Image (cartoon, helix red, strand yellow):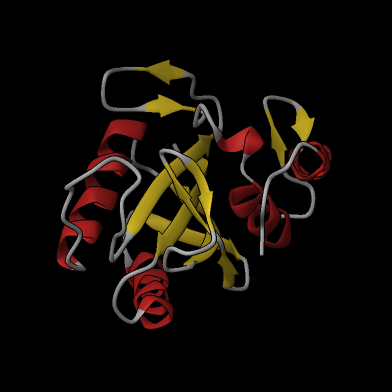
Length: 162
């Protein structure tokens, strides 16, 4: 059985645009995934543990929507393998990285484990996820709420997308 999944891609180290292009290509050719939508690449201010930091290297972000026959834990493992293949090293929470792949939402899945929470617990407040998601799927909803409404709320409360 296939499920629809939303994946946020981000990078602020190395050749970020090229890395995201390659990752989308790899997702497209994965036999367990069918690409259903992809946003344009956007540049955003870095979000650190201390908030948005305009002096930090900017992030390159994108969102893809896929159908997959993998369950959420298997999809997470697949995404983590892609991160490692593209040089991701986990040094600090919300630190600079060559690639970050977050499972944002998955149809019919609600789970909370020490390593994975679906839907993503902070997605509804992050314009750098919501804006691209809306471009990849204009009818997108998170927990029944239109992503367009969540984006407007996040931007009104100080979220930075550019």
